[in-house]
Amino acid sequence: QQPVQSPQAVILREGEDAVINCSSSKALYSVHWYRQKHGEAPVFLMILLKGGEQKGHEKISASFNEKKQQSSLYLTASQLSYSGTYFCGPLTGNQFYFGTGTSLTVIP
Amino acid sequence: DTEVTQTPKHLVMGMTNKKSLKCEQHMGHRAMYWYKQKAKKPPELMFVYSYEKLSINESVPSRFSPECPNSSLLNLHLHALQPEDSALYLCASSQDFRTSGVNEQFFGPGTRLTVL
Image (tube, rainbow over all chains, first blue to last red; front, side, top):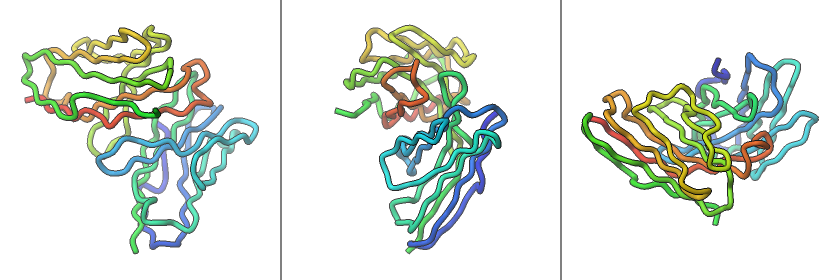
């Protein structure tokens, strides 16, 4: 079953914060997060690992609750460049499967 | 070079045509992936190659035939497609599928396919 993300869509003003949630029906061992801008390919944001280890390229924070099978992505002081669709990808075996997606729009 | 290239960018084909999509990476990655993405939907995994061998086939119809001639190249051969196969086809690569939990995937720009 596909991981479910919430909210489905959110509109922010520049400088505001947002939280994107990802829920999985399966046990989580690690979670990938990607952002896809309109008409472009998905771009890696972060990997969260069991035990709290994180690997990411941007100043975006995230959390990972193994017991609740959930992950959350925290976007603070949003910028126009944060606009796009955010996908989580909980790992199942050796492969992750994209969640339902959250569309984020940042307006001036 | 952290780029994954895909050709062609756009492809229009009839239901009786045979065509191929090509994907290339020169990052030394040993895992390569094909995804299909419909408008406003998440990418759906189709195939995974690990060390040039097919590791995952997500029950994809046989009219899609993947091929990995070498560690840098991934092809997707298309034959007798249906209009509902029209979508964006994304290729990706990662360092090693066996440790994919800790390795990010790098995506190509995609091929936008239209089947008439």
